[in-house]
Image (tube, rainbow, N blue to C red):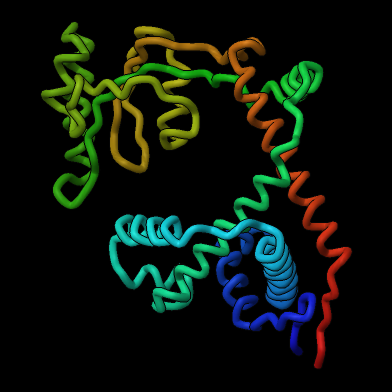
Length: 286
């Protein structure tokens, strides 16, 4: 089966390359589908992506101004400098031919210029749109609950077994009960003694669940009993708690405007591509 886009034959290898590019990002979304269904969906999305890129390139080549060779050469040199290994160029562009790579760079610049032209006349989001988007998406701008916590930890590893780790952490807890300051015991007993065991402010999702279940339920200045996580035995102290807050619109207005602007740009590009598709002749010939 050969695919033709406005008379130009599309190499099947381009679609296969796109399949492999999309696979890591989308396979989890297809966990409830069979292998055959997942492969069919990936192939269809990849085919559409390649068709859209082909149409954009064709339109850009026909309607966009020429790109100075000096600009192409400069971007090629910059790309070479950024890459750790020369062979990465061929991985990105599918060739190690310098002339072909520069031609791809030239076309990419043209397509980028085309999309900028498509979006340049878009209006700024109105105040009404900004307010509505903020009200409908307040949770996106909220600052979650955070706690400042320190811990004394004894790891269980090849050097320290469970019994030995517990014995050390119990010594630390006994000294705490006898009035020794937490901050003095962390350097003495902890496997992570830096800053007196102070981890700074954390929010849920940053640490393992067993640790968070304890520290987020401590009162300010409270020291926990000994508890265990997958990493070992801990004693934690809570220094401060910042409750979840939602900033007023004026504090996050720039973020709201950026989100709305990106949505508008995305829709403008999608509409433009849909128009190109409607005018194009796309054929599959056996």
